[in-house]
Image (cartoon, rainbow over all chains, first blue to last red; front, side, top):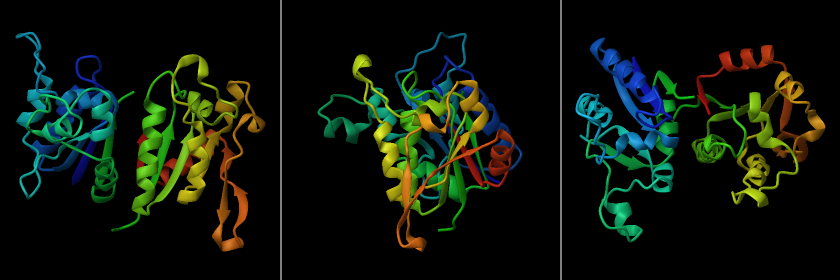
Length: 133
Length: 134
């Protein structure tokens, strides 16, 4: 089955991202395809490469990166909503330049894109599973 | 691209959290994909379309006017939970008069909002291909 996932909550604050990660891992292990994971609302905070959890805790950002979810063109299909990300201080190189900001904090296993990617995931997938409050 | 039935479930009050605003942003983008789009307002979500919102005192953007634009995007199926309204002491008269122009009926102005029971909402939800919950 082709599955997409939407994550609406930030890491560590809320279980949504952890549960979604376990779900995605289990789905892949069962032979399902994860078409796309879309990070929205505070969920965009799951994509910052500046995350440094204590050593005895899980690293949620790296957990997601380790799933290596990519499309046929090799682009990451861990997709961060651009509007939600910019509002909350997450930028990639291109957005940093456009907005006159130095540096960037999006983990390379993720990419920033528009909300259309969420709708497209809903259209293309057999299931869209939402994690959040 | 195929057409699917998308329902957006709005369950939270408009300004306490960002869910309502960012849900509306998704709905407006979704309009460009020519899908069958409907919205449901449940629990505190019913406050999102209450008439006479004023955010002057809290310094936040009053985005309630955007709901009036939905009709122009062919989004005219807005379902409101009757039970959620009643639990909050609200009635149909407290809601914004959201309308659309029906192109199949000489562009007559018609109400977009339908008040339905939770049982009817449950049936509507089970008819959807995709339910996005905010």
